Length: 77
Image (cartoon, rainbow, N blue to C red; front, side, top):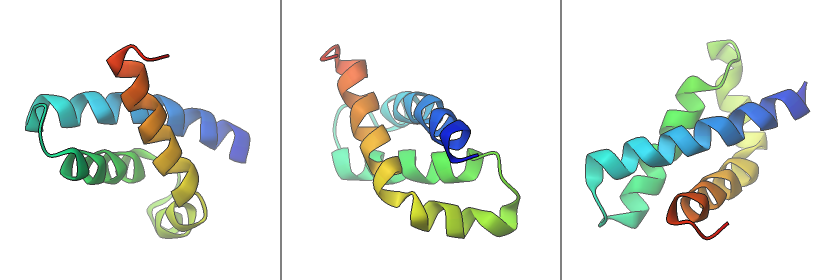
């Protein structure tokens, strides 16, 4: 289950970073990161009751996925 969830989070991270970039532009890096993380947690395909638990246990992974997506969007990967 977690492998499928991690794969989905990676996909969501790319979309989240793109949306944050479109909305906030090239400034406000920390604000964009918060927005991206919030987007991912909202879109994780689990029942609402489990989202806080999942986001807590996978917070480091979600953070890394956002950072990876940022580098990907910049063309660094």
